[in-house]
Length: 300
Image (cartoon, rainbow, N blue to C red; front, top):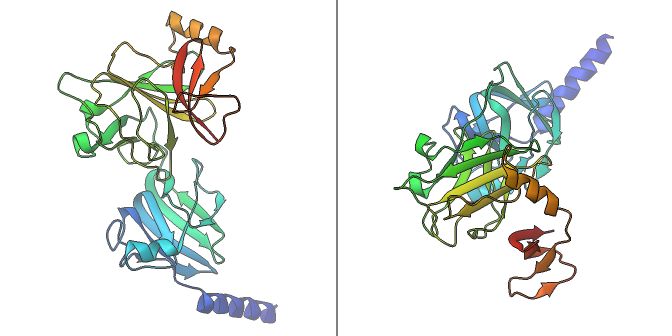
């Protein structure tokens, strides 16, 4: 038995001696400051695995390299961790987004010696109650400003939908970048694919990781709708008509929601951006027409 323990201890020492450095930086109480790629905080090798504890952690990146961001990103591993702490999640090389914690809190971050998995554990309680989300962008210096908070809307189908109606002095100008996010960029960080959103057309959003900022191809001072359907897909709809509402916003108590359900089974017709009808759309952006209503559609 003594020989076994001696062998195990020797194996752990060998693993530690041969392990490469692993670095971490992001939004939290890091010893070397937030988002510091040049001198990021470093994991310790403990019992054959990488470990570090970070307070007030929301988002972060890990990498085997440091220096400037170009160097740091060459060694990045990442994942979409999910909402359940204590679970080992597979890491992917070259991950382009951030890793978001299940909620803001004090976390122990553990990475396996082979850099294959990451586990986040915390004693910080999960927040209760609804999360407030905001339009955050160039128009408000990217702050979580109560004047730009979205209002949750009760729906008929269990989807999550929010609405923002612009005040008289508010607008998003052409080219102003923005996202939809909570105060900690944690539970919600919704952006686009890098293309500009058009008014009165559905625009596919991506929540989590580090999606591209959204811009509009026209100034908007009317209304913005943001929705997450029951399958987790998210959408943006902007209009200068404050009475406008997308078909996917099936608002409870609104008779128009019934009409939207009734036409849902009608076969859509697709057109490319040059106005040519496409019989079998694939891998691109199209205009989808159902019952005379045109919406933007991303087909993958």
